[in-house]
Length: 240
Image (tube, rainbow, N blue to C red):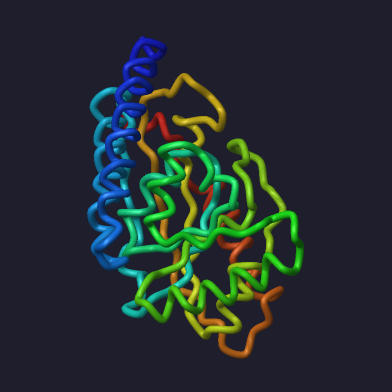
């Protein structure tokens, strides 16, 4: 049944991606925030579809920790689920992505209209400068910034190397950091066609103020909080 459900989901998601990419292109004359509200209808629809076709639900804990002003979200990266869901679970965010994603037919076209921060990850320190320069601009426009500090998806129970890009942006801009842990990879594994039913727990931590702290210190604080909370999250299948 999981295979059949996953097949149905994949077919419908592909159709939605094509449709919303055309909607995204048509939204070009609108303001960045108007485009965002329109295009993220795709994200809401996909997560709704995941619930009713795949049986993947979610709960969000810690919304009270979200600051009033634009902030930088540093989150665990396990799955494609959070790359879709976080664009509507948080205030409007500008996600940091690799430039290659913008070249993907349909998906990349739509993503370009969401005002992402597209970087060349192979350029080393230059990529960090891109995050800071573009990130400060997005924060000034009222967007939050979404960064997956591990850079790539990691399997449940594993930990990648935490990069300092998001923390460096916080240190330079003064914007607070919001750490986020979740277990989406348990039901929507990376690079896996078959998804499993269950409930994703998204846990939002207290904001971390960057004043007087280095990017390296902020990164260590974020990593410690996220990895500690990862060990405390309930199994995704426990709340079916």
